Picture 1 (cartoon, rainbow, N blue to C red):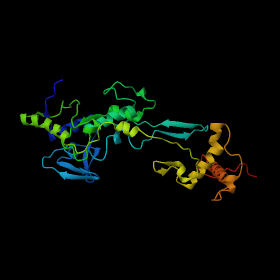
Picture 2 (cartoon, one colour):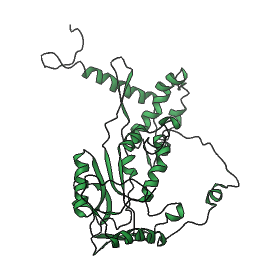
Picture 3 (cartoon, one colour):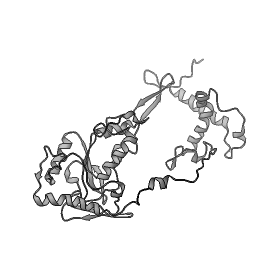
Picture 4 (cartoon, rainbow, N blue to C red):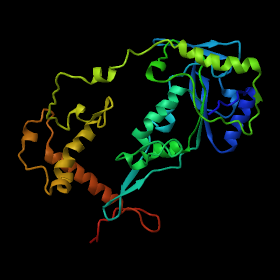
Length: 344
């Protein structure tokens, strides 16, 4: 297929492109200057793009550098990736409440995802999105491949919805930076994607621009600062002379028992105490048909903190009874008193 003619999209054209995307009810995300770095952020207009800024990169170093040419995409990728928008770090999946009959009622939380337009996606990030598709979304969206959501057992439906509604707009790079090694990872600066120029102000490139632009992208490929070693890494890292797996007994009253992502889920002594009681007196009935406590009294005699199993359960029962009394306080006329039954 013949290469498309090169067109020039200037600052006015970028402004029109962003305005068009916003008018189409898309949430536009692109590079912007925040706190001394080029980061990905929601854009209200093209004026927020980093015109005239580049970056200086090295190991553990990211510095903004002014440019005289006013280029908008002449910076290397910032600290974020587009995954932060396609697969948010924190997302509510469902909620539960106990119904009037005591049976839990589960409600799925699936808000309508925004229709994203990703402006200035680097080619390595385009590949990263494609790599994540079969892992998170159950296969590439229909526009990018024929895989179906059923190709993996449990696709992330939220990710798939956001992915299928997203419009990535690529930006080839001409400034590779000192830390990039995408060429040795089977990538490079050039992108093979459709162009979005209909309805956006642009002009045909003159002869000089038409010859210099492809050369600048090709030159960036030669100036990539780092590389991976030759092939064979898969076998190298997959080889292991031996492996072991150990099982260790632990107790739910220990702080580290619920350690998850660097912090305990049950950080308070109260929450750990409740977890200590819940399986023995409640959930084991559902799982195994009997309670988990046999009254052996070891937990009382040998507890270094002096906890008494029977006293702790009595406290919970008293809290339950007090809550039940509170529910009898309100009368239809708005007054309140404790309903203690028939009085002499």
